[in-house]
Image (tube, rainbow, N blue to C red; front, side):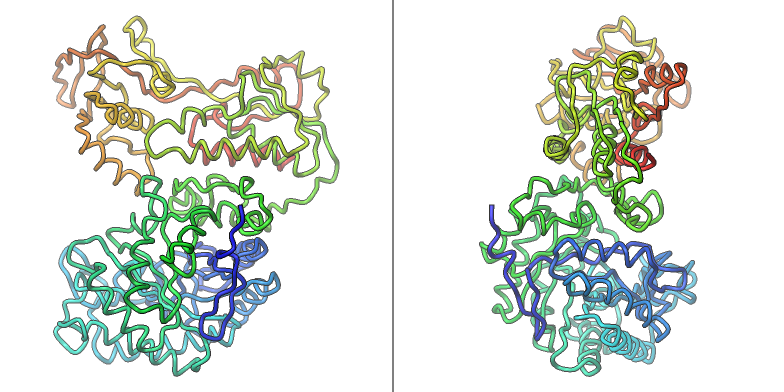
Length: 639
């Protein structure tokens, strides 16, 4: 498939981009503690520039330290930042890519641990804005901020950035002035739509004065904040027209605010390209006077091309897909889109950030490019990988890409392991896309694959490996008290086992809850028991918000803080926090969802035999795809 529109040039003011793909600004937390650029940040962005994107928008960058919203936010608030910012732009330009800087002030979202001063508020709103350590901006404060934005824009231009974007989205300071949800002022900066626009337009005019008429200034804008009284499409359109009237050269359309950031970084349950129709409305309203860019679950080049072909936008903004695979553009141009590592929209690394900064469930090198260059190992070794789930597949590919000879043994009939199960619940089809990516990558590699192979110490020894990577996975945990109850596992249900009309699910963690929704969508009456005080506490936060709303609509019943005392053929005796017991009866099917247990008997045997082996993935400790892929990569990279 070709993408003639997506890979055609586009102009923003006097700047020409080689294609219409923009990497979205996404806070990495790679900056130094004082807000300066680091080598880690440069390596991360340079890798994405190398992959062929037309423009990289550098993350939200504060214009004054008091506006820093992050633990390790990037700053453009003083001249001392210029050398680092120049190193960053030089590294990106060296790869033939343009680069912009997004100017941001957190306002009410400023990080009190790092911003160095009181939180600056547009208005004080009980229950919304901080009470302590904050103050409402005076008109003099506002004028000082206009100057701060202007100075930051001039610095960005001096540092070699090709454009500057004003962050008017996601509930940050400029958005707080625009939005009636947060702007309750009664002076010249609030009270009417025109007054709410005053400060952002003053910022725009000052920045234009600073950088000149030919330098591109763009704006990112949330056209719907989804909070009831804030910005919606109908009251956003006049603002966007005003921005264009006053010199904005392109509009970057997004959605969501602080309390509704699940729409800013939407999980997989939100439809692909869900924001494109809003961008089309903006494009129509402004008469196509400037390019309109759109972001929002656009995860592949085919969808991007379709949006352009239907004239809903002029430019496509992708974020998480570039974390997953920096080479998405180059692979697509080469006609090899199937080899793109697919973003799962799982938010487990990029938003959940278990390591404190941006990482990725399917790309362990994201943000670690300098630490883990994919060059060839000093000596090619003979590597055997046991198990073809996510950990084993990633280990095999990583070892092969580093020049090792790899044999992959799988006892089943196909590759993928528990990915075959993970893709079955609603909104989880991306896990099947990941499985197909691995199949394609393995098929195109030099890896020797042996299916239907029940590996033993003897059969592995016969291959004479320098190292064996054991990735034998896990199996559903079945407690002793379930024996003889007739209960079946959640995995069996997801793989097609029949259930009756009334189902009791034992365990309300991630697997149990996804199985509950799976069955409820089939019209089953579902009840979930959970020992802890909440359902799916291990589910990613944004995903969980949408999930809880869906199962409520589906009529799924739940009992939390509930212990199972005993099971019978059609029910369970349970005990609550007050130690009160009761019988739940009348169920056709009992489903066990107690998690998984590791299967690492082979790893133990290899150790006992004195063979060099390392274990990775669920066979070490059952977990999510994020952990399995990362462990598989690390095991192979260390060879």
